[in-house]
Length: 72
Image (tube, rainbow, N blue to C red; front, side):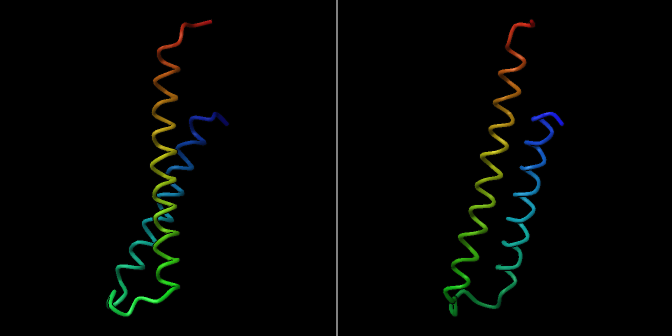
């Protein structure tokens, strides 16, 4: 499998986990009664979404390098 397809798969998996976690957290009744487990949940959600953004940028920059390279 090409690294290009694999990097897109990583983007979608991380984004899906991040968005599911975020939707789950936003469905909670109130942030006034936030517990330690909720904070860990938010940190994990942020890590997934951040990883998805980094993987997407890595994918886009890799494509630009391949397009600008001279053919062998």
